[in-house]
Length: 513
Length: 89
Image (cartoon, one colour):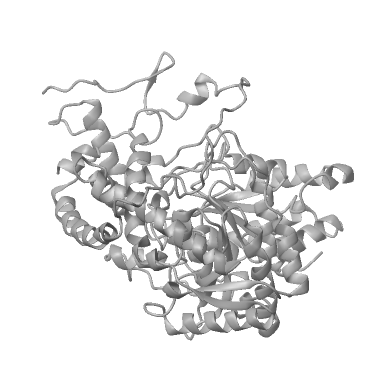
């Protein structure tokens, strides 16, 4: 049998190839990942719930299929995956990392989970996040602190820090995340992994716990660009249970990624460097890796032009009006009536439904969630609606217009994903504005509904990963996959292997007994 | 305090004090959106313009009553039990 530590370091695509060649079984893969989870979790804490038994059963169900049946399935069939605990899974506790949902076992699956099950991809468990996906460090989880595999004293980013850390630490080859302002891409950048936010409406949101509905999008987390392409083609496509779902099939992303990977030819492609998304406020080490990567794109034949998006400087303001407004509305459903926590008021307070709700929500929600609900309630209240929410929606139009003009000059836009590398625990917890600045480069894509992804660009002076962001036009997700795969291949040639060659993995020591 | 009532969260005094100063800082920083939100700019609600369409009228099986009630804090005779709806005031 293959060395177990070698097995878990394979890409999902390579694992799938070994499955098809019958060198390994899906059970081998799931068992190997469960061993890594056992060994890694004491220090990484990426998972809120491990569903080992169910995953092994799902693996056996795949292994028992006939060759003909397997041939009908997507390429990643039999490869295991971890799920951000913001996506509902029938029979597996789903909490959004909030006390208010602690112990809730959903009676149904999200559409993306149905698709993964149809593809026979075993589900390893549920990963940690900032409570209701609200944060950029995963420190706002009500249950535990997830560590960055590159330095366990640092955050993995957020909100999807659990999914990114699990994939980065080899606890899973793939994961799903949700991205409202950068919650897939920024953790990708901070953990040296790949994270993709598809076009808004490209992947069904049915069963994704709603945070800010006009911004939320489910997307892939992986260690390679091709793995994300394969996963996005599985989870994407129309779903009549999501009224914002685009009535089209997934884009040809796998073909684009393979083209980039195999040919590394970007002649004729115009790459737009967004003037407003680098320079001031970005760490020098982040800037340096970013510009070196841009040179690589040029060396493969791409023409680099500078584009200006003058309204991006208002994006953070618009986001912090629209997002909390939608949060305050969406989280109104947690009322202690039908599921989740119920806390009755103290004896001296009237035992009414309204008071029960107020005490339930006071006990069930954490600081950041309360802050955003209150901010959103304020923004939507009489007298402020036009000045705040109305203005923010107008800024959204201006940002969409900036993108339209930029895509007249360039096929794909690029920027650093995050202004800094992974920061230490506690560093930004008492300063909400400093925490919000993490998402300065990722938020515009959510406001405009365009697809974007982060791939590793190398290590900064501090030895921590830097993320490189590609942004493509709406419903043209494949356009970013080609240069991303080509850049990944070119960089890995320089590094003599993937970025994780430089990662120390003490939790894997002693696993091959 | 009033916002806490509107949002149905029984905030503590300490939370109200802390949140006031935090929200003032945040409010200042997001006020800038008004600089460019002039009358001639139309608002955007959904970034991907889709025609509203009707789904095919095909019946599907909903969740069983027992599945719907399974996670409820209190149930009785196949129904959710809520505290009294009307207050004293």
